[in-house]
Length: 444
Image 1 (spheres, helix red, strand yellow):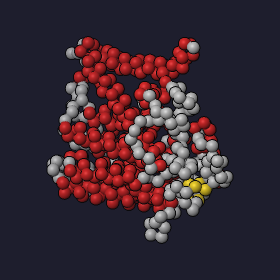
Image 2 (cartoon, one colour):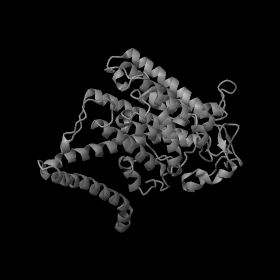
Image 3 (cartoon, one colour):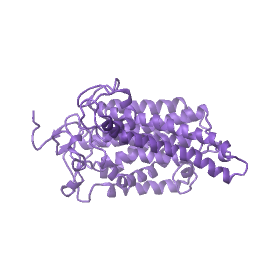
Image 4 (cartoon, one colour):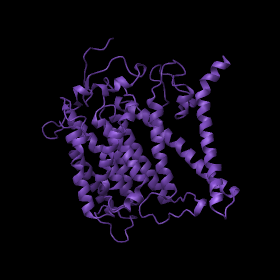
């Protein structure tokens, strides 16, 4: 019995050992290297600042992956109209999870991917999402706490090997705003990759937490709304500019959403079919694009859309590793271009925030710091995105707007996910209002 328990704990012990080795290697290895590179610093002097680095990164990873764990709950419960409060429980046996089982990633590893109570498999979606959300938010936190990423940031010196985070109330406000924005975009993406409409309360929540703080505290704008940066521009107290910033961002999101609709939701028609599935997808697309538009400004949105389109293709194999949640009234058969693009958006926004200063200082990157011609050229390039973002050149739109290609059945997620992670029956098509079409009716 003891040998069996030890065997079950081996993956967790191996993971903890790998984390310990990685932290120790960073702290002592980098301190030793820097002591040789900098003659004025001894090895002992550099251990403490590297321990501070490791502590900050470890805390960020735990906290941010906990946000990912919460977003897993949001993606499961909110489309079903359930509350997102209360304790986590197994969706199979409904038993409340123990505290140690709720530890992000490590809890899944310690259980060997099976419920403690019913021993049924726990979808690998949970640790994957926790890891992805944790890594993306941690990267944003590190680069901003260490003054590496924000444009026109005056304090960015790091004093040689004794670098340390430089924290101020303004920086914490901006970091919190960006964390909430990326987390909200992740929540939208996790729901959309299941082929489910964005719940109205999630869209309202996004509007409240992203628009109101910017209007009340314009410092979180970071960049202005004008095409060219005004001389000696400081966002503090510019409430009228904040209103223009929000308005221009929403207009840009609607414009680029309509352009991308040719490839992602070709049957969308706001006038003739306002309640159709394709139109619903277009509304969701605009809602998702509004998040990065509010965060980085309309000027850089063409470049972000292009990057997201490229990532949608590059990250498709990773997306196939994430099982599809059983929908409120069934399950989609496969993911298409819309789901891939939704999955790529949080990554694209993360990359932009992490490298924001470098990109902002690059003349070829569209921003308030670049020439207007650069913005125009990037915007015109977006017009070509729908042509290669579509699933296949021969793909056709179904009645509900979902792109289907008869020759692309091998890309279905059903084949990529083990049957113990999926419900017994699958539907052959899905509409965003929840209506399902099945080849065979489900068994009682």
